[in-house]
Length: 387
Image (cartoon, rainbow, N blue to C red; front, side, top):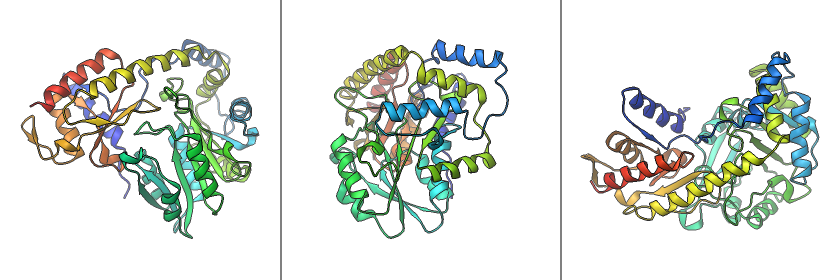
């Protein structure tokens, strides 16, 4: 059975309270609070004025596909042709297309857990079976080579990797991914590498393009990314896959029957995002860096709450299990779902339960919001946990 997205569900609950006049402190959705940079907006307006509001090729306009291919060729060192790029209606759609292209009934897909809420259900949509591999907090929420080896069966079709990670913020070191890549190449397993947060890393953490780790990997890897997180363009719905030519052709043909092309105006905006000035990216990242530092400082002061410092993305994955069995705000809390629902109803703080990510005992907080809101949120959480 396909479940609704937990992050969107929590966001919906928060909006219901807001509609009733409740001042909700919403940390549920993984969406930058910044406006899309002005140069990108202007590119969209220019495209509309020039009449670029009609159907485009289903896989995206050639100019955008070429711009994406140039990013992987020039910046990641993975020689990529525009024909290998398919532009979709956001990275979630790109993941769905990729899974549909290579998976079917009887197949298995290995997914390190915690994982982004949609991975498991998108795998199920193909008829394949998600194989969840728990990665504990004590191991840095990272899957080891030994765990991957143990999870592989003759039915394994794909390994899904997400670094930087949603929900944990974990960034695999290049050497760790290289070791996994070496093991992958000993099998017939392909890789779907979700790199949507690739430009949002902190401190010494560096993103790695998985396909660039070995000359044989581009033929085995589907890379997913997009403009949503880096350029504050979540509503524009532009993501993409970079895949072997035969897989990309299938994805393009599939998309032509599903949705046809992504929004034409959004595609022209995405070209400006990728090829235009990158000053706004640096400014937004600087803001996220300050917020991350504040969040970690405040978490240290929360009684019974710990958090592995995120190396990337904009999430704090808090361990709240010590509060299970308590009565908080007059309500019994027994798991991450009841913890988050009670925090919402009693403290007006919206978090996402760890169980939705395959990690009971945790709650995810997005710090993609301003410092004033974060301060109010932590003040409310402190009172809630002391209740």
